[in-house]
Image 1 (cartoon, rainbow, N blue to C red):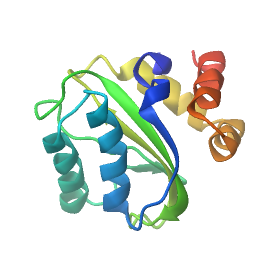
Image 2: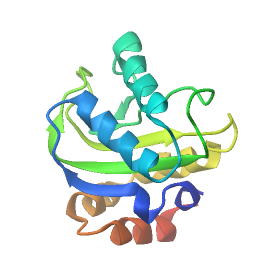
Image 3: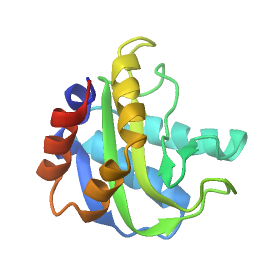
Image 4: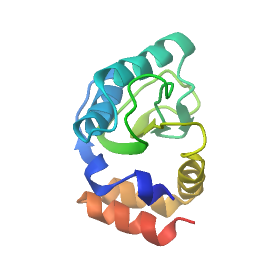
Length: 149
């Protein structure tokens, strides 16, 4: 379930960044500060976008940065940062990005149900209203717990 890997302390709201690279660093720092990943993982996630392009922008306004589970992952987790001002990743169909969900997994299977739950939530317009209007992390987690499968 998504709420098993996206915890209240993994959420940071209304973050101010000037570009996509800073956005990934901020989302990664949330995971690093909670012992989920180390700095090398964050750098690898940025490198992936530089080398492979903005494939991580998965739908309008949402990016899912990640790197291989072989570098710098201590445990499975997902962070969420909401951006005060959106940033461009270079994805003409889905830019600008307001929401960054950074994924870190210890193996290829453990995150499948979490990503499935996230995918379902991203299909609900009211989820975006919750993210946009959230005053604290708890309100986001409360919504997720009620609406995840």
